[in-house]
Image 1 (tube, helix red, strand yellow):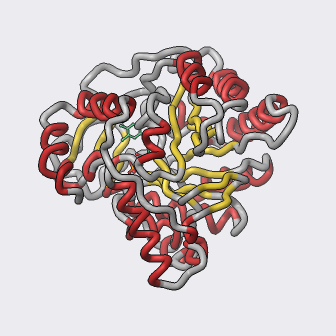
Image 2 (image 1 turned 180 degrees about the horizontal axis):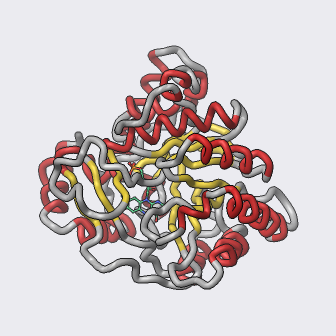
Image 3 (image 1 turned 180 degrees about the vertical axis):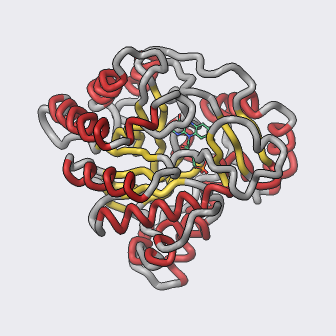
Length: 364
Ligand SMILES: Cc1cc2nc3c(=O)[nH]c(=O)nc-3n(C[C@H](O)[C@H](O)[C@H](O)COP(=O)(O)O)c2cc1C
């Protein structure tokens, strides 16, 4: 752990409630405070995934920078890409506070934010202002809670952000917008993906269409995974993000705050989300881009996601506990691993633990 953050920053931030601490960290990043050293570049970590050229496979997951206030500062911490959002068409307050809870003993968090964000217009302005800067910045899109037509909300997100985003992630897996996860059911999903691909193609008249990813929950049954995989391949979606937070409380049920409603993230999510990732890799085949998310908090856990089938990896909760030097330390650790194992690319180890993960049962 970074000694300075460990001794001062974390104690300071943890003296605030989680949402205030989060706001302070965003403000510090957006103000350009030098919170961590940018790691070296490692040729063995360079990646081409879904047509994107990344300096390394580690990204900031959605939900940290919901309004696109600090994507360049996140990239400067060492992340190879940053996903902003979830953004909904209209600004939205989200659920009543408090709505983020730390489970400190397990380096975990439960949140029920409910897509609080400033809406498309404000986030578009920020992306316009950084237009032309290097770095992969994806936009995660969602639907307003009170929308009369949620599919239209996603269509609007694709239409508006396609010209400015490096990629788009369709988030239908938040547990905190009632009914949203039902859009993962095949009857709705097939139609939604077909519409979004067509809107995306219309919004990219010249040049390469912006890659379109789908983000799923980790709480799906085998038959649901089958259906989703079939639709992803049939509709030629460009990538899959596995996973969002879980409704399961396996491994944390005795801890303070475990009874709070919402999605659990962090260390206890690692096993479940990695099993789901491997199961989807088996269904989607070797060529399909997959981003593994859930409980990554070290070079070892990032490497294990790749061994389980991930091309790219994201994290969020790990940084709450380990601070802004975490991405740099993970990238350095992965770089050392590639050198010590004499690999040409970290991608060489992808799928090396695929069956072991796919065959495991999720923690009950
Ligand atoms: C406070 C909080 C807010 C989040 N908000 C979003 C969001 O707006 N959209 C989204 O797709 N995922 C959101 N997530 C889920 C993360 O992107 C990620 O999928 C999940 O937390 C698992 O990764 P982790 O264990 O590294 O945190 C949020 C997670 C947390 C902890």
